[in-house]
Length: 422
Image (cartoon, rainbow, N blue to C red; front, side, top):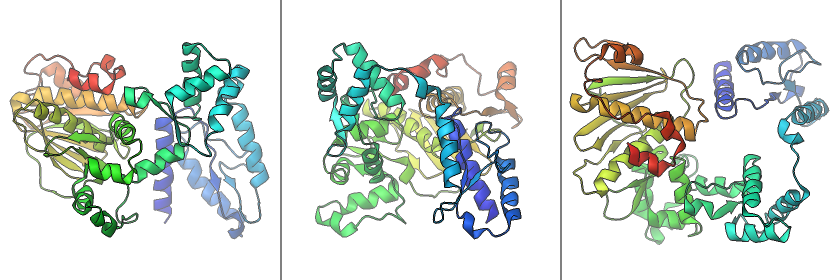
């Protein structure tokens, strides 16, 4: 339907603006040959034109005086014009005009020449390659790798020692590897009989029932290759967290948690309202990851912590001993609500969640997330905007002075240090 198409386009336009706010966008309409009446193109143009009002980086089709480029794959209608536009857009990109030494070009060529037989290289082998082409200085080697990473030619993450030692030269391998775990079970099913044959039948059932993956299962689906690297990658991108509530080593993957528990939540409300901008898919799941990681840290230190209850759009988590929060995501109203059971821990809980959202925004969303915070007055039940609540010292949110864990300076530190600072 038109409504579904508009919703789909809007989602992707907002996602692009969130992750790459200055990137040029070219919108292409396919199956042009099936449109007999030119007026239908104008109808589509009116719909798309309304969508892109707040997206200045969308390239216009000046030749046809519309905002997209109609093409037909079979007849090649419009393809030449599209190629010309893409070439012009690329030529305007400042990165195209960046000067680099021929040694760097040769270095990149040597790396990419190994794509046919390898998915990734060790950092030590990369350094040997750079030395062979005349780049001996370690600082210059790092600068070259940073540039290749920024331009999307390789993937080299450095937030942990494990990640730093591996350079991914075939990004599709990374997508395929993550897709072996993060998948829609109704569409991309595993052969359960195969998993039962190797003794992992129950592990597979639990993965898609509770979002809990055993180390054995991850080793199996990843063919026991680069397991630590992939676990670290998912952890640093907040797609996975340790789950220290079992006898064996297991991991939580929130995107696989099922729907459930639609009962009303009790406690003082703290609402993070994204309705003026955009609440992307995955933000709530990443928030759950950080909350569980924080809770697990206390569990690991032998504190008495209740096992979290997790669902696709809600959760109950004991962040710290006696500090229980209930979280809920409302995709329609674009809100994340936090309900705090114990009013004495309300200020601390709110501060932790605010800090976690800022970390997600800084590390994953390119600081493109924007939200307003509302706090419930314990006396009247009225919701106040954060600044007004702070001004009036609304209880129970401002009953004591706390170390401000939401300090923006903490957003630049690595994930482990950030969590330790909460």
